[in-house]
Structure formats: C-alpha cells, structure tokens
Image (tube, rainbow over all chains, first blue to last red; front, side):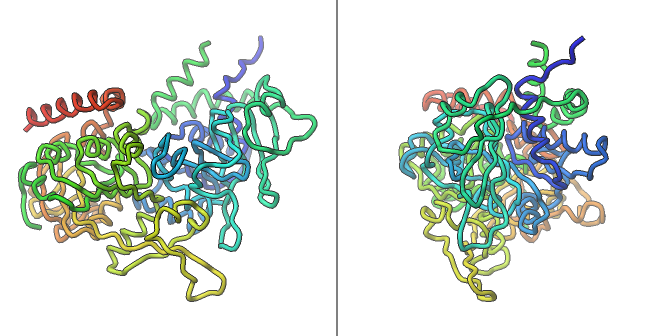
Length: 250
Length: 272
C-alpha cells in the first residue's frame, strides 16, 4: 500500500514549516491560515525531532496566542527583537522584494484597492526572517515594480535588522539575496517546471540550470498535519480547516 | 464617569465633524451603537481605526457619514474585502490617511502621554511616507547617522467600543485588549456599550482589577446585549460568519448595501 500523498495546500504548509527551521518564536498575522498551519506544524514536529521548543502567536486566535497586551504586543515584541519570523504577502510583490498591500494605479485613486498596509511597513524592517507568502503565482502578482511600496525589501542608511528571507507561492519557492536584491528560484512544486515559473513571473530572478522539486512532506509530518495541526487550526480558521479535510478526500 | 444612558443618547454624543476612534474586530466593536449612530446621522466624521477597520468602518462609509479615515487596513477578514470602503476610495469620496498598525498605536501612545509625537522604527523607504506628510524623519538626538520617523500624537474626540461588562461605578472590564485603554486614555470622550452591568465593583477583586478601565476615563455607558453582533465578543460569543458573508455579498452594490443597512437598522430597533 502506498503512503497517502500530500495535497497542494499540505505541500505548502510543510514548506512553511521547513522555512521556519531553527526559529524559536514565530508570529502569524490575520487572514493567514497556511502560515499559521506551518507554524503549528513546526511546533508539533520539533519535540519529536529533539529540536528547540517553538512559541507561536497566531493573531485572531485565543488558544494559540500568548499576548496579553492587546494590539501593541506583536509590534513591541518584534521591536525588541523577540520575534524571529513573520509572514507578509501582498497584492503585488516585485523582484526587489518590495511589497504592495495598498492597490494598483495612482494613489489615492487606486484602480484596484486592497485593504491596506497592516503592520508591514514596520515588521518588514524588524523581524529577521520574513517569509513572503502568496498562493497565486501570476504575472499580475509577481510584478517587475510594485505600484505602491507598502514596505521595501531592502533599505540603505537606516537601522534595519529584518527583511525578506524567501518567497513561497503555489508554484515555487524562491530564496532572497539581500546583498544582490534579487530572488533565486530554489524549487518548484509537484509537477511544475522551470518554464512554468518563468512564464508566470513578471520579474527577473536567478535560477540554477536544474531546479529540483519542492520536497514532499514525510509520513510523520503528514500525519501531524492531518491530526493535531488541523485540529489546532480549526479554532481560528474553521472554514479553511474544513477545506483542507475535504481536499484530502479527493 | 458621567452617566448610564440609552444607546440613542450615547450615539447623540457623536456630533458632526468629530474624530472617532474604534477598535479592531477582535477587541469589541460597538455595532449596536453603530446602528444608533447611522440612525442619528452625524456628518463628516473622521474615523480612526485602531489599528484596522472592518464591517463597522464599511457600514459608516457606505452610510455616507465618513469624511476621512485613518487606518492600517479595512477588511472583512475571511469574508473578503470591504466593498463600500473600496468603492469610496475609487470614487475619491474619502480623505485617506493610510497608516501602518504600530504607527497608529504610537500616535495614540503619544496622545495618552501628552507628548506631541512618538518615534517609530521602519517606514523609511515606504511610500506611506510620501502620502503622510504629517509623518516626519528626524535625526536621533542621541546617536549619529540614525534617521528615524516621528508620528504626531492622536487625540480622538471620541473613542467608542463594546465590552462584556461594566460595574455600577462606571469601571469597564477590557481584559487583554490593551488598545481599548490606550484609546480611552488618548480620547477626550469615551463611550462604551456593554453586555451587562454588575452591582459589585470590578476593582474590588485583584483578579479582575488588572483588566479594568477605570471610570475616570469613561464618559458614558449604554447597555447593549449582543452589542458586537454580527462581530464576536472576546470571552462571550463568536463572530456570525454567515451574516458577515451576507453583508459582503450585498454590499458589493450601492443598492444591495442600502437594503442591508435598512435591515440592520430595523433589527436594532426591534432589539431596543
């Protein structure tokens, strides 16, 4: 009998957990079920692997959030250097890892208006390992230059210890080189090719001549994800947890 | 602490042109009071979302009450984007003061401390600095080559939120929602709605006292059972996801929004 294979979303969750390797404290913003699941997976898996204890703070959760100082604490905690990793997305992400959460066209009369910057214009500068996550991998999201810089990928002449570490999409995983201010393609997910990534990415990036496949989660990881992690996730994201379960049935 | 009042009397405190600070969805949003405010119809309000807005901001914008909004985002969360906010932005019908969460919180902190501004890391190189001429870059007076952003103090005319309970003396339980205290400290007037009013003082017990906003900061309190609906209230009830989804669908068009708003106001009248 074959081991069950992971669904595309489970692949992403496992990839998030792998990207968090070595992290001790990770925070997850609102409306971020896949990053939240990845952080929960890391927390569940580390003790089994004899690794460091992980603390997580999932915004919007009562159970999986240790903050007692309201909306202040995430930002103060990050400002003190206590948050090792965080996730940001964007309606647009460009090749220099600048992100746009505001809208397209000429501000303030945006042609398409998104919710707004949230904490990005601060957290991107102070959290050492920021993972950019956006499920949609298309030229309209991954653009050459963002229309509005909510937060720049890199900065010169200012105090900054934080910034982009990697970009994970539904199609591929990129590393970010802060010195060169460029992404480098690390792997492609299940069945996609180097050419698929090229065709769906609006910015220029580096790529090795052979691009490996993003690793599938091992059976132990998959079992944790389908058990404890899905259960923990359902408290904050009941609809998403139900979707995960439904996708497994197919 | 001045008074225990009706929702209508509470809403009447919000006069034309005032700046109104409201909390994020998870902290206790005074939705019943919002219906009363829409019914009263004050004009040209300047909304300050602490630090992000949701259905409350979208409703107030759709009802035409808001002249300007200072916020880090407006979103309906899992139900999607905020349709009336988005439409108003595209139509140029709102003065926008886009922000980032900790900058708004820093502004409130300056307000609570009575100082004119507060420094904050990050932001330099963000286009927010171009669209927020009131945010400045200064040199750190204590170190060389360290430019840093300063944001002005925020002193809202009115802060408004919903909480589980107040006591007869006007003290309000706010639990872990520290930004509610910051809003009240910084604001000139604080209006609170609560699920319940209890007879014994919240300050009499060490276990509850730490999470209490003292009556000193509270101007008026109105009782409103289920007062955060369709949003949830911490420790009390969950958000009504189906209702939020229904709002998100209907508010896509101006006509759909008008129909939703009518139903929302009628439901509140029936509850009163």
